[in-house]
Image (cartoon, rainbow, N blue to C red):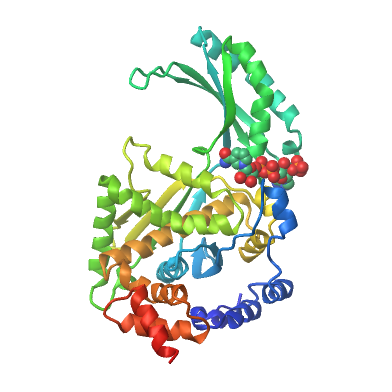
Length: 430
Ligand code: NDP
């Protein structure tokens, strides 16, 4: 990739951006043509098969975050989002982290969990023993239900038994939850593990003496934890009015607050998910699954807390760390049918599922850094202003060059609101 060609990418026109990506060899000629001719869209005939009662393709903007260095590889990050400042913030943080060596990421394993939930198990001890003793047979049954997974070096790995005790506060009875833990290869695996769970459930019921309540994957993907880390020299954090050391310390304090206070932690983590969701959407992955898992993980101590940690090392560098469950696929699902998602994968250089998981966490950490840095320095609104002004201009009916004209005057106005925007637009039309 010819990075120089992408310099000041945000300043280029839409056509220049696409051309620059092609000239920088970040996209193929085929993708250049497809972007120019706008053919990377979901066709209505495919969409009609995807959901029930389909009537319209509802579009969101697809942008590219720049400046990311993840595990020593330069990356362009595809992001689909409706929130104005997300792509710019990610690019900004990517640049700051890149100056200090980029992100280091890790994912030790990638396993999905299917739950077979039993009720009315009268003898928990015997049921547990029977299930454990027949683990191999259960795994064989799972493979018989989804044999192709073995071709992809995946397969069921083990069976865990969890007792969910009765709880008088919620008047819930006792349950036995059987976890089928599966390596789903390159797939996210929801359909794979659900098929397997359904197939093994009758045998498990037989072994337990209880009755089946349901079987379904768990989106709390605790066996698919990805993490990212970055170490930033304070000088790269400085603003016009604050030293890098002050910004570093304020970022650490902001995280300490988000660790302690759930009201802040929710917004802090929402900022992280701004980045992660945008990449999940772009790549056609199930963002609700990752969202749900992330928030459960944020509560694993019993209190909802910040997912990230910002500390300083012995040299005074700011150290950021983020860890969360990520369940994504590099095959199957929406990706197999959506041309935009397929393009996002190509832009990312076709990562495997684990690699994509690691990229996602790095993007989340970048988004978090950008948000906290803005919050503890000039505040979040200033950076939002120009994009907000453009949104307002469009909302009151400005088109073409008038959007920029209205936005510029709006930023100089005393009150940035739709009445002022309307007045400016009327004035320009005189
Ligand atoms: P698919 O059902 O598309 O399954 C993936 C398929 O990809 C496999 O069956 C296999 O097909 C093929 N494949 C090709 N190469 C590989 C490889 N290397 N490793 C593994 N599979 C490979 O998708 P998933 O099972 O991943 O399910 C994901 C979808 O399920 C998402 O769209 C998600 O939204 C949805 N979903 C989510 C739920 C949730 O609670 N989160 C619940 C239910 C569905 P073959 O065997 O034919 O080669």
